[in-house]
View 1 (cartoon, rainbow, N blue to C red):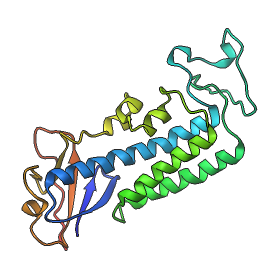
View 2: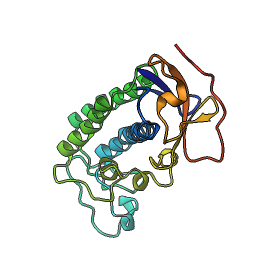
View 3: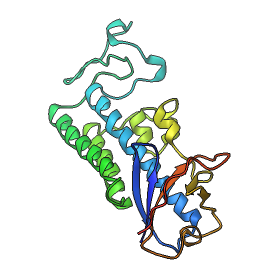
View 4: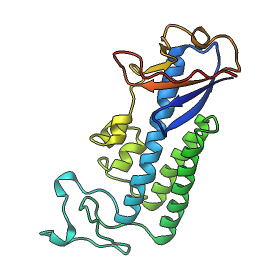
Length: 223
């Protein structure tokens, strides 16, 4: 298998396996799918903690601290006021929070390992599905459609993360570009056309938004 070390920044990268015969269009779309899913997974790990502690999101027009609310606040058994005033305060029980804490730790470790072990799309999807299942346990009646966690679970990454650094990291599968050694993986060619026909090749590449030229070159790596 050809191993693509996808470098996103000085500290962020993941490994992905492909073949010389794979079209570059397919490769870029797969890499964008994986990249965006990793951003979504990291965001779920963060926002689900707020959900479980402070409850579902208030309607945007109702944001504000409960202690200053003009109408009575419904406080359930596990109420804990949201200091940002964006959630209802009605979180979940301690045991579910503990389960989430373990899940988040597992996800963080998994994301770090992506730079050492080639990523499996099945495992990545399993991690995402785990969040969906736990959220359903904590909130069986569902979440508001405007809750950032629900938007992430629905795959609406740009809407969920708009205005944040994570949102800026989301890539478009139609326009993203893959570069290696100053050369672009043109979509009408194959992986082999760019890196050669050796299936044991390993390269360090950059996955970027549509640019006006090649990003800073990474050293070529071949087995």
